[in-house]
Length: 373
Image (cartoon, rainbow, N blue to C red; front, side, top):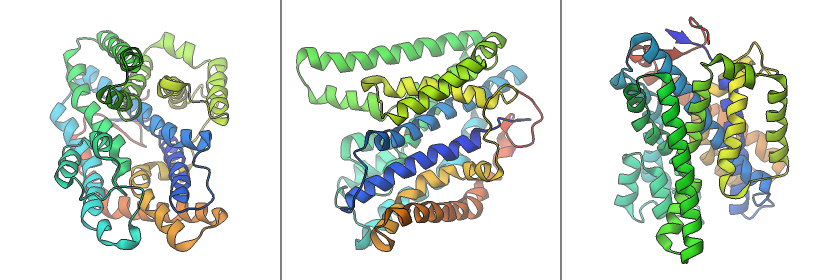
């Protein structure tokens, strides 16, 4: 059974593009070129690109699991994890293997601002092996060409819990209440780790936990996406959130906040996450959406956005270091080469595993809908 969510692939491509722009400016800075990496807008590009991925993932996974449970009575958890393994693991481990076994042995690819992966080798390797790259990032700093996988760790940690919570919940309403309680608890914990050091004096452990909760464990953004996914099953919520005024306000606020580089301090992830949740909610409700992103080229680039996200850093560094120092040339080449190697990765490598996903899916998103939302 397939469920079709229009516009989401195109949104994935936009999210990946924001991250690519952010890292391009970062690597221009690394290589001593004129850059805009310290520009508040560029800083936000990277963070909000990932934020979109988180909210979108929470929305999509929750929507599919709700449909599965309501149609079949329970979520087939083993099949859920097999699908996740087939989608995420092959490229994740390929990127990790290259980061440890290949790139460190090519002197031209060394990045002086980042540590050698062989420093704390076993700690780094084990944390990445067990899908804790965000913890590795916190404890031992980012590993060249692999650091971007911290967000994959967040998603995998989310997936460890979510299907069990949904199976445990007797009704969709009960699950929605659980999501709201968990989201509120997370916000309270974030506030505690922010204010306790200010009151009692700075402690390294609290600083680290503060950074972990505020910057590299945005599970709250996935819960925000999940909440909007649940609201998408409620007629009253649809009537409220799909109104023209709400849509225009969400787009204008998101664009306006980003244009001025507003980060809202400690809770910018959540504020932008709510706006992205409203936008995603409306993009999938195409009958009332004031914007359509349904272009074939964007849809395809969205399908390969995971490859683009995982592979672009290597491309960025090679283009800047060996091909051009001219920004007008850097960006076209970065996107061109990233798209080329991402197509190769998707078509020649990832599809070898993805072809087995349908055999483990009771409900799947797809381009040939049989069930409308």
